[in-house]
Length: 472
Image 1 (spheres, rainbow, N blue to C red):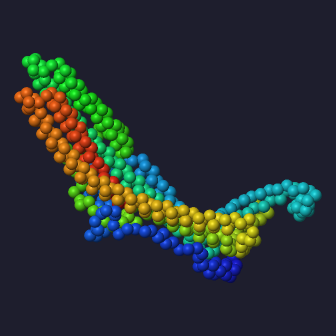
Image 2 (cartoon, rainbow, N blue to C red):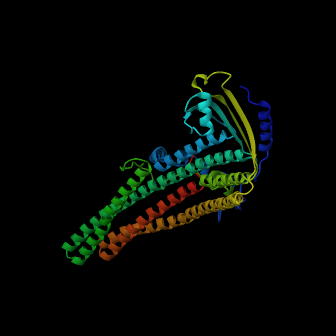
């Protein structure tokens, strides 16, 4: 069994020559305007920034590290993103085999009963003496569509870019989840701190109420002072169940993020202001192109669109097809595998040039080019958003630092005023209203200070995320 080798060789040479021609534009990253530094930030000494740190280096709290570990291993969003990456990897494997032909094995036995008045029927009666005709066929067929003008290489390029895009998308999901876990953890620490403040203020109110009752029994104050002091005490008391509810809800949210059933969350006995010991450097905006997974994923989307535009353009050019079949064929089962009498072979080649398809191919190409333009717009938007998020985090950190200093000064003053009001009241130099007002003000100020400190932590975590930190 010998297939026409010269014909196959000629077709292979022709196909190799045609495939070497590649239409469409080669991919280049869309031009984006990036500033040399972030808004209102000093000029960086170098390009290093906290986004380059691994999350275990950035977050030094052991309890938080354990939560992030659990989230990376069990969070459902991360698991789904990783499965999407696996799907894309399978597509890449398929695309890599695009240059190979399709080969199929077929074994078939067929019996037909033609009309006696038909040509086949009369021949069956005349030459075979039967009412039926048999056909036994076993063959291997080869079908090779040599897609010209680089279509196969574009398909590979699109598949690989799709895999890289899914990989970056998975990393982007992880950076988001790591950030959400950190934000939730620091929110939990703030709630613990506020609960301790409310409990401490409640104890202070109890002490003040006891003092008021002694004053009342001595006839130094009237019942109105007792009632107002007791009412002030209920303000602090009512905060406790409210904060306990928020603590439980936050613990449940963190449990879900880490892929576990709702339960109590362990936290370290550390100052709530501690986030990381690393210098909070933002580096240069250009680093976002390589560090931000979502920006890189948007770039890969442009690359996919570019490859699809090349595929659409190549579809308008001639395509070379090669087919070949070889096997065994007979009309008697007894002779089916009789060699060489039952052997047969065919080989064919064709060149197809689209001529008139109601402008479909041209429209597909125009649409593909527009899709590329859309993806380029999305990429530029992702870069602009990334720069804006870093700038937002930097200004938050700067202004919250000033706010924290002013709030801390207010707390210190009010704590001193509360102590002095109690002493003055005991000596008869201050009224009960001044004591109640001082205690009310210090409670609110301490709660405000805890909120500001929490906001500072959130700004630092947001800076880390916006610089692409969390996936390493």
